[in-house]
Structure formats: C-alpha cells, structure tokens
Length: 245
Length: 189
Image 1 (cartoon, chains in turn blue, purple):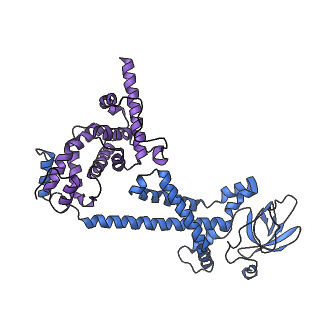
Image 2 (spheres, rainbow over the protein chains, first blue to last red):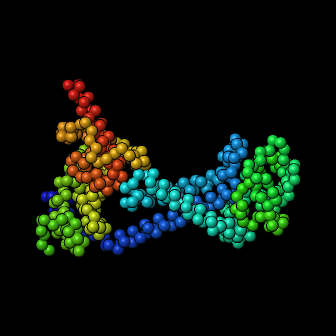
Image 3 (spheres, each protein chain N blue to C red):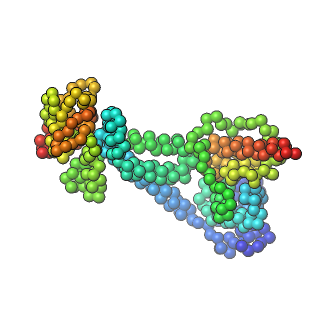
C-alpha cells in the first residue's frame, strides 16, 4: 500500500481519485430483500420436509413401535427414515445460520433461536397434518398424478417396516384376524397367548392396527398388536378396503 | 459543506451518505487512534496495523449506505474492523480461532453485567496488557473492547454478534485466566 502522511490523508485521496467507490443504497436494499426471501424459501422447504416426516411417521406407525418393547425399539432404529431426518437437520442448521445474521438471532443464545424454529416447524406440521395436505399428495402420487416428489410419497408413504404390518382389520375371530394392507393384500394374523394386546378396548373390524411379527407367505404370528390413530391412511378404511383389492 | 466538530458520528454519516466525503475525514480522525489500538492489542502486529486500519476505513466508506443512521456508528465500524482482524488472524494461522462455546448455545442464567469478582478492577487493568498475549483470541477480543476501548457489553455483543451474556462470560473467564497468571507471577517473585 502507498505511504501517506496519515490514514485520513490516504483514505481521502483514494476517495477523491475514485479509487474507492461508495456502493449505492439499492445494492444493500436488494441484498436485504434477497436475504429475507432466502430465509422464507428455506423456512417453507424446512416446514414441508418436517411435516412430510411427521406424515411418514404417522403413516408407517414408526412412532408406535417402541410400545412393543425391545423388539419394537430395534424395529424403530432399523426403519427410521434416516435420509429424511438428515434433511430435517441440514435445513434446520442452514436456517439457523441464516437467522443468526439478523439481530434477533445473534442477540439470543442458540437454544432460543433453534427452539423457536423447531417450535414453529412442529406447530406448522401439526396444522398441515390437520388439513391432510400430505395425505392428498400421497393419494395423487399413488395414482401417478404427482410429478417430481411423487416417488418420495410412494417410497416413504407406504408402510414398509420390517417385522411389522400396518392395515385395517377386515375380519376378526378369537384366534386370528384378517388385515388388509395399504396395497390391498390380505394378511392373516395368528393370535396366541404370547400376543401382546392393546389396553383400553377390544379390536373390531375397521380398526387401523399395527402388528409386529414376521410375514411368512401372508401369515403372521403376532407378537404384538397396536391400535393406530384413525383416518391417517387416506384411502384405506374399512369401507374402502374392498376397493383397494 | 461546513463541519461542526460537535456533530455526532451519525450526523456525519448522514452527510457522507448525501455525498459529503470530507465529513468522512472527520470520522477517520475520530476512529483512527481507537482502531489502531484495537488492532495492536488484539493482533500484536505493529507492522500491518496502518494498512489494516486503512482497509477498514475504505470498506466503511464503500458500505456507508448500508448503515442505518438510527443505530450507533461505533459498533458498526468496530464490526468491520473485527471482520478484517479475524481475516488477518486466519491468514496468519498462528493461533486457535475456535470461537464456539456452550455460552453461545445456552443462556447463562447466573450472569449480570454488573457482576464483579474479587479482583480489584484497577489493579487488574494495569496488569491485563502484559498478559494479553497469553489469552485465546475469543477471550482477548472482548477484554480489549471492554477495558481498552471502553465499550459496553451491548456494543461488544453487536460487534462480535454474540449474546450479551456470552460477552460477560468471556470477559469474566478472560479475567480469571489473567488473575491466575498474575498470581502465579507474584508467587514466583
């Protein structure tokens, strides 16, 4: 750098010689707008992925598996949608990094801003779930009417947990029941004294249940049964199970 | 345009934003000594200080339209200096720039700005300078800004972009480390 009498002298000479230019205000306004737009886009994508993950958990009954004890826990760990969870974390970290550029982000400890993002994502996901947004998209994907993300819905939305079967009870008696899975397949569930039953009420036709046990040629020796929330599997209810066949 | 030396930094920035580059000279005069002192105490580098501070002012001028005149000017220009000095440290690669700590993640419930420890502040300030080079950059910088630049915790928080509680924790930890060096050196005498 050239040597001047003082820093002031050097700076003012560079300014007057146009060696340094003042960036116009619109550059910063544009940058701010782009920053906000980026945060909004990232937040929407994050909300979409979070709510989709919640949908996958509900659809597959993943969150119910720990009720089956150690075996259920092992099934849970083996079948968690790790890629989706990784995406949720990547988007959470990216969003937090962007939010930290703004004063409300950096003025508070990380736990507050991350907590707020997670809270908004959970509330948003629950709200989206209430409108059955992903269930509708899943329906479209099953009918091959959903481009781009259709594969994801078909891949993650169909219950495919190892050692578990999810479906609607079509028929039931003392020793076995017939379960209609989402793809319309009828599975015979054998019930024995070792089968863990849900507490609260008896099973009946039309219940959406999860069964833990190995499927061997359409017959499952049930180790445990669990009633899942109603109406989560759009297009699969007692009345529609015949249609699926 | 006439310059009244009583004008605030923010008043001068309004003039500069309107095209009065002479007013920038007044800001340079006001901050030159401060930024040089900050650079020397934080970087321990006498050779490049002039060039570094000049770059800080040139960047400040170039980006002056981004300054919001409703805010304070001093944290804004110190922030530019902080970025420049950190880049210098990175290039030098001679010390750890691991600025992550738990206080940035969790709130420090026990901390308050008025908190003092048993160290005599005046005595400590006299001795800080001799032990500054023993401190990690993440403790040294808030110590320099607080004790030598006499900035508030809030301003330091804006400059370093960390929570105020983290500023307090880092200054207290820095003071504890310096006290230890101070006590050890007294024992060895």
